[in-house]
Length: 199
Image (cartoon, rainbow, N blue to C red; front, side, top):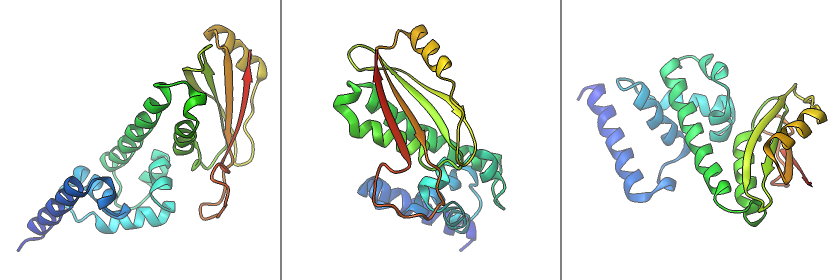
């Protein structure tokens, strides 16, 4: 049996498990392996998937890694990087849609899930502003600044100017706290600081 047919049989089994068992049927390395197989169809992608998960500390760190960091890993080309970044973008859009459908304060856990998925694993501090209307619905989600590992410059006048431009009735200010990849914390919200203001 050729390596190509071995890979296609293995991938067919992964597909079947995913279809029959849902999202939790595959392990993290199998999800990454299958994503990579879409970009690298004639190669065994399991070793690369395992190496990526190890390098970035798990699936969250892998999917939120920037394209340049992914491209530095041996075996990763532009198409493979694009496959992983596409999966990340799709996940964020799914989470953002859940936040946008209902008033933010009535859907606090969905907001935390979205912000954590987007910000918690970045290696530098990021500052963003969520603009809400008078019904606490999300008008706009904007990245207002990026910084270094321990600070991000924020210009209050720019935040206020933008809030006035958009007619925001309330603001949620969020920034992350980059930490070593394997740092353990018991506080599920730790990587984020969230502050709310209303007009």
